Length: 314
Image (tube, rainbow, N blue to C red; front, side, top):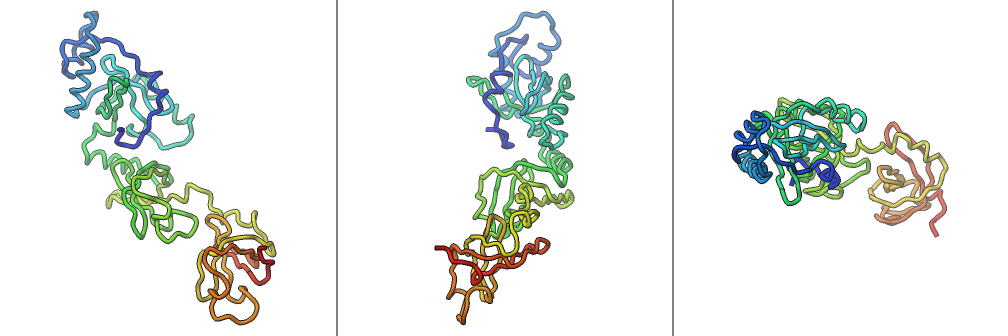
């Protein structure tokens, strides 16, 4: 499997993997390179030798040079001594993080005709898979420094959740872990990150802060989604009656969820007519209620609601 969480569409391989023979003196990667590039016109050897050389380079974690011959939406197409392979975008260095397909294609096109130093990360001859990584050609320390230098606030990254704890979740970004604090996981209120995330889950994250000296990266999941409070006044109005669900009952009232990320408060004085000892005597967590909006405060992310001033749900 690809170590940096890049899935490769099967259609890639139909367009980029076509076996052909290349000149070679023997099965070692170094001698193959000299044979292929230094003996023009020599009779071609069976392609078995190329796959054997690739297997040797893979087993030895050898760094090999490859020629970039083209690209598709997922990465670069390469040629190594006649074997056609693929370098996924997540395994390239110095590639700007962007979701704009036009910019992405332009960056790929600039590299066509150049040479890369790479390591093999997947080799499967029966399935015609020859996948390589530029990032892995660096040693662990250099790869970490490179990843940190490329990571900038405002970027969107893909990662895998490695740990979930009370205060947040750690996400592997391909060699370095970042932390998504519980307050940055959802626009809505959650009691524990495990309500939303689990270990091994793939997630898209927003890079908030990067501290190269301490090797710390602050991440956010919720910032990749629209803030529901930014447009709250377009969806709700004072005196409007809306339906919601009681999420929490406290001494001074009850909180009501109107939609994901939007909760309002029914103050104890707005729960019901007459005297009662505690809000629990009126409502309970999970109750469906109909409430009237008393006030809207987008700046402080507050909604004032009334239960006693709204018709009951029948």
